Length: 202
Image (cartoon, rainbow, N blue to C red):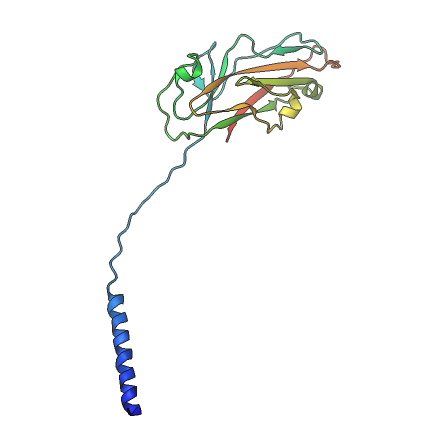
């Protein structure tokens, strides 16, 4: 076979291969679109209820809690006449899940089904809490049947420790707070005002 004929055969094979490739590439469809897609994240939320007071779920309570004549070394409950409930708001809080104390309410949208631990932080209202009392007064939280360790107000102001067992969504537990004055405290006829902030943490 001559070189010229061999060259022609190679060209024909090359043309056939290229032609097949071109035909295959021609069969490409149009594009369809699924447009304007939105994903909305949920919101972790807790609520608080004073069953013996307003008996409604809210984000803030001001029950005007006062302890008078506290003696050194003495521990007393901060609000002994009140039933405070803290709930993990997964969209609704059912009476049956809160021991029929605080009322149920309608579905709240965008709530997550997230188990939350409760973390307390104390906000010292300066100058309404002298520095001596901030270290002389300690708090202990009892939540979900578990008692926290006692820490000074100053220590609770930078706290990251959770209290009790974590709450499942749409459940609530009773919160009790105990305050104590250090045995060696010399603060007489002095007052300290503070706020307790509670945060739910996954």
